[in-house]
Image 1 (cartoon, one colour):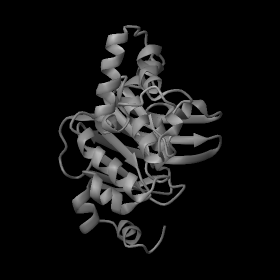
Image 2 (cartoon, rainbow, N blue to C red; image 1 turned 180 degrees about the horizontal axis):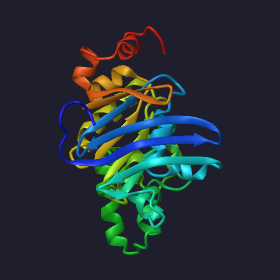
Image 3 (tube, helix red, strand yellow; image 1 turned 90 degrees about the vertical axis):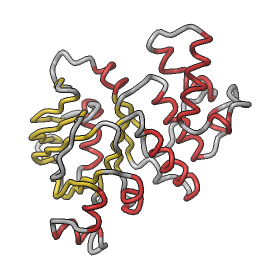
Amino acid sequence: MPEEQVDKQVVHASHLNLFYGNNQALFNINLSFEKNHVTALIGPSGCGKSTFLRCLNRMNDLIEGVKIEGNIKIHNEDIYHPQTDIVQLRKNVGMVFQRPNPFPMTIYDNIAYGPRIHGLKDHKKLDEIVESSLQKAALWNEVKDRLHTPAKGLSGGQQQRLVIGRVLAVEPEIILMDEPTSALDPISTASVEELLQELKKSYTVIIVTHNMQQAARSSDFTAFFLNGEVVEYGKTSRLFTTPKEKRTEDYITGRFG
């Protein structure tokens, strides 16, 4: 938990350790995330921030030899409990990856894919979800006249917003973003950053970024990871101006990383 008192915590990781075989990648992570805020996870490459992010919707389950200790709770429900419905978990905790990954189908079908997988067949309802999701992803006005053209025909920035819309279509509560703008040009990056401010009104957003200016601009809270540990966590405005730890100061002033 950051040193500033946080109410309405949605996600809480406590005493979290993660191992790839005999190699420990995360060490005693204790972090909480507040509803309707953007939290940035920063740190040098290989510091554990993306590994931690993937713990929050159990994407690490897909990697052979991973062992996790400690727990992660969403609304006080342990997501690593043996009876957890992982499909439902990943519906509730959506993921946007580093490179835009639209499916090889139309713009419309990309957005409708999730609702259809979850059993929705009503065409009118699907139309409403597609429009609503694209509106929320700030893409509707750009694509409304070409919904039935291939998604691969969109620009990189549009593709990433499409993927965000695809995540929103299944009505998640939490959105994880793993360096979502690192493959985008500056204009597309600005569009996604602007979108973050809209998304946090309805969702809890946790974003991994290597771009400290992006973290400073876009997040409410920041956690600084180093060598698989959380060195410091607090309000972004405070952490970037008066960090408590020298290692944090050294990193954000460019002395390493």
